[in-house]
Image (tube, rainbow over all chains, first blue to last red; front, side, top):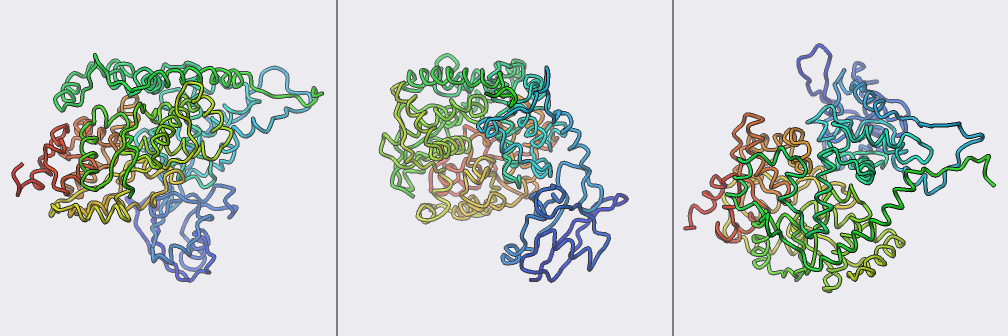
Length: 330
Length: 299
């Protein structure tokens, strides 16, 4: 099949990037990486990109195709040829470009290191080994699948606005250790993730879940950490307090208490009288004295209380960490 | 399209974004489907309760799904991206995990709430009128084509992603809003950020980050020559409309971009008046758009 690509080219000395067009005659089974290899072998040896395993395990060949981050080795070209598309291949987003499709991964690894991606232990190591129960492994199964390719980071909308945001890959890795029954650094990790550029920076755009080639679902991992921070009563961050208003509202009146949301999340914002007046003039300010109330509120109040009891048990289990030293097993 | 839906307006359309609820009811009448009220529905908890108390979030949404089932409705109609994702997310979990469904139902029964058997679909208004019978009906009722009006579609996140829970269309190349804009006689305006985030979930907790996200679609839609932007989500609407002034100051660009709800756009094409669609309840004046729409008729 004939495959045409437009590839974004960039040299360190260039002022800006340019698009080069290449056409190759590739086999029906060709992946994007195969096509790039063919271009490099047959047409332009100076084309630069990363690759290694060719089987979606090493995480080296992350790049963008028509603006969406993919692993080149996992992307089959035949469907695109069939659709008559001429895709634009460009480097991943949110990372500095070194040359052509090669990005500088250092900011990525810096954030990765910041979450201390190793097991923290206290006391004596096990005599033989820790035995992790299946249900304990299940909790972090998805997060453990990460191959650190950076596809999630490439598309993170929050990171575009705040380059210091720890981001989906590092936080998914943090979740992998927060949920590890052998780990003893849980509270330290939660405090780190609760920081200025931590979980509450996430805008829930779900691009990370959409792009991840391994099914890690980083947004869900971020939510798991947020949930544990909340369960521990760590409400110092505006993000956690914002969530608390939704939680409280859902059983206090049944509807979001819009009038409580601003002052409780960020008291300073409540002083923005000009903004508040604009809302009032447009008829958008809810009645603070007589809030909207759902019917059958008793049901949802009892439900919240009942589930709370179950949540307490769950938290106690997480705090304890459940492992057995194989040596001590009966 | 169905003849009736269990109607879940959610919090915002019931409260500060009342114009969306009013427009949706008016449009439903024109399109010929009935909206059955769910007595005693609550907030879906949004992404906030989903994150902070995931177990409670499933219960909260299961109760809403159970209430729809009790009304003998097999489909809930939503008009908010966040409600759509929350209800569908919970629905997916409950249908996939029999133990979870049993546990949740035991709790619902204990507090005297409706239990849920798993038989309800959750569909956004957008999906019901972007194809099939709903789309044909839309073309039929669009008796006042919005000729010469250029509309930039803004999808928002949680009607596209995660696609495995939403899945109505290609999340990278959606076309549903464009189809509807065209059916209304207007011209869709294309721009790259139409599938990106408006920043609303963190606009109170991380205003600078949220504004950074918000500026991009506003600037692109303006550069593309749009008369207005349309969105299927009241949270995106609030962000694009109410926070537009702050975004304009931050970016030093006078966007002057009217933001309309999907139901308002359809309503205008269906011949509903400025007052019936409550355009006056917007922070950014809609004159740039509504003057064009209502130019030939007296408002």
